Amino acid sequence: MSDVIERVFGVIQDRRNADPSVSYVASLQQAGLNKILEKVGEEACEVAIAAKDAATSKSTSEVVKETADLWFHSLILLDHLGETPDNIFAELENRFGTSGITEKQSRKN
Image 1 (cartoon, rainbow, N blue to C red):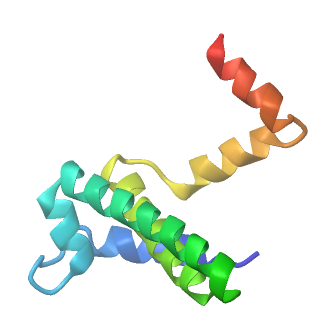
Image 2 (image 1 turned 90 degrees about the horizontal axis):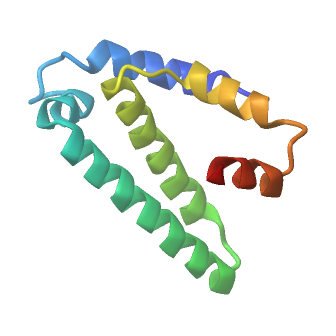
């Protein structure tokens, strides 16, 4: 895998306090959590729509683009909350060897 997530996250961290008139990241950070959540939700819906369209068109290019947007906005959210991609990677690593069904059942207890 690529280190692109870490590189993008570094740019997000560098731009979080920039001038919001020239930095999209800074403008979202300044707008606050609700605006960031709105963007994450919007991008998630766009991924779903693109995937549905791909089932018909047999082209996944829009799914890839919209997923990149979702990941980008999710990274902004993580930064806003003081989290890092490393903690997401660690959580995913912890789930190896556990079936999805078992993992979901453990959340109910």
